[in-house]
Length: 114
Image (tube, rainbow, N blue to C red; front, side, top):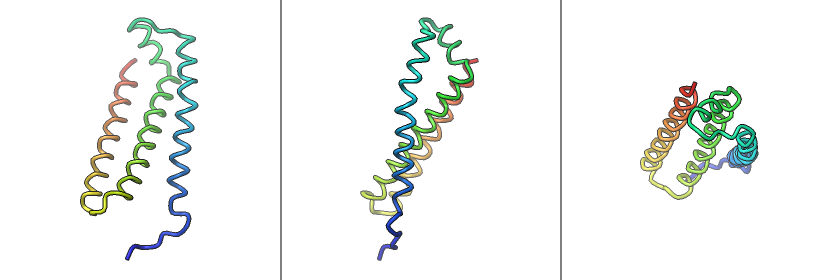
């Protein structure tokens, strides 16, 4: 018998998924607007653009929001469609590790651009 979680069990996941989607939706046009003002055409210009602290923070926050958004979606898919517990835990661990590695890789790229 499955435990009853109550009527609000998925509200937090839904809200987190929508808020990260909204944040990324607002960030993309803003990023392209700032980029259009700087118009980096060569590697040195790109490095100078990414070296700006607001751009670094925005890229890192965007990457974290993307990873969180992906995690909530994958977790819900695993909970709904992967029924063997050990397989669900293994897949969840693999997704968490790959998303964490991606965010760390992004941080290394962004903070190493100075």
